[in-house]
Image (cartoon, rainbow, N blue to C red):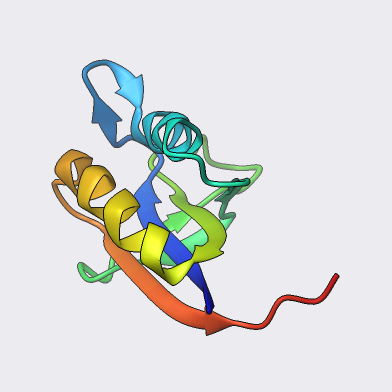
Length: 101
């Protein structure tokens, strides 16, 4: 069975001076995950209720970012053990995925 994994971060999250989403994607690749996508939001809020917005009138920083990938459930467990080492905060969701080719 395959699962869809979404890792919710903030744009400003870092690991040893590198953007955290970049570190996570590199880790996924090194662990043999077939592909990953990083999505940057234009509007969002999290548990604090503080809005993050990318508007013309405001220079924005710290927007929500989502790293997502689809992989076999067994492999995801090992991958998430590694990825979770880099997370100080954030949210990871895992759900069943049907693959259509």
